Image (cartoon, rainbow, N blue to C red; front, side):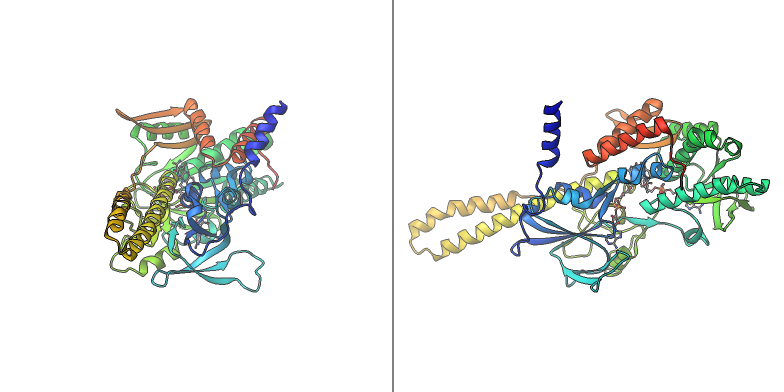
Length: 490
Ligand code: FAD
Ligand code: NAD
């Protein structure tokens, strides 16, 4: 046991720490990374920082493992379990990485600068700064698409940031406690206990499944008089939920939801969110106002302002409303090659997922390694050519030619391959300890669903978590929740 503990301590503590890392080097190029999400974190994890100065700017000084966010919203997991402070990752890098908690406000691609603002609540005297970059990686993700529908921004809960999950949890518990208030009117109890989820994409489906689990596993025991009255409705404008999954898995999800008493309303569009109701346009185009206690909005993605502003700098090239157009090496179309964009802020032929963003981040780290290699070789070539030019003896000149030729060939061989996305499959949790999976195999896709798939979903996400610390916290929370149930305190 002592040996095991010794190895564990060695493995977790052996890495570099601030103070033993290489310092800023004015001779090296500076990469500024905007964001600390899937794309940016994957890039930082893989990047060889001995070749660059790296500055990471994000309003969140942590990485958020979004796939498990709906589990935080119902208290299955604690928030800390799915967060990884960016500095934990930065301390493992060869050269110290400057991590700045700030929101990038303006990019000047012509003077190569980024202006950012302190995002903390207590601000110091300086809260607004501009820095220069040699390379910029735009990895700011996306924000929630509300389509400007009245009331959504102000009255609905979202499921994008950690704060969204915390707000949803508080509001859900508010609804339950208000419904349990002595003397509450029956109609009002039904309103408070009606939860409406908008969007039949994977986010809406997973949130519905998690709320259902909370209801089944905990609320039935603690609020037996209310549990039977809770209603969950999932509203989707399209004819079906989960359009990215196979027909078989859509049907499986629909039948699981039916058993779970989650009502799916397809071809139904939310037109307004009010304080105590939601206005729906039904499939027959009639309008219905449905009372509810809480609306969770999972209506998809929209580009952030900083992304829209960057697009506006290249009005003739950046015209795709879904996001930034990049070339096959993830360089911003229209720019001079110094700006790269990855993840949800880009418009690509694949769906915006963590899988795509993390593969793009890892790819970009390889691109930077290739570029550094090329720069080193180019510097060596310049040196060789200069010293050869200075030599007057013809025999000595001829002696130096082979190394010059070899270095030229080596430079020509450093080629940056285009980014290629390798789809590993789609997974989603649908509640009741069931998950669905669309997995690509040599002979086509395999659709899998049920409890075994749920165990696969759990193990896949556990292994995808970036650190051992997070894996331990998540596994621990799953066990605690199974044994003691979810926390009902507010
Ligand atoms: P993000 O991960 O969103 O990161 C963007 C970063 O930029 C954040 O750190 C943000 O704070 C920062 N930022 C924002 N504005 C600025 C600014 N102005 N300046 C600097 N930084 C800024 N995908 C899957 O593949 N599998 C799943 O199971 C899955 N589950 C999901 C569950 C939920 C609830 C959600 C919401 C999404 C899920 N996704 C999943 C999608 C996945 O989370 C996104 O595709 C992924 O996060 C995109 O990575 P990104 O790096 O582009 O953006
Ligand atoms: P989405 O774009 O996939 O789905 C949003 C849905 O909301 C759409 O189907 C749209 O028709 C519907 N909608 C929009 N406005 C509406 C309205 N007014 N009334 C009714 N319905 C309305 O969004 P998402 O689920 O947040 O997913 C975003 C991205 O993240 C996707 O690429 C998705 O693949 C990815 N993601 C993946 C997973 C996973 O793999 N498990 C989980 C979550 C998110």
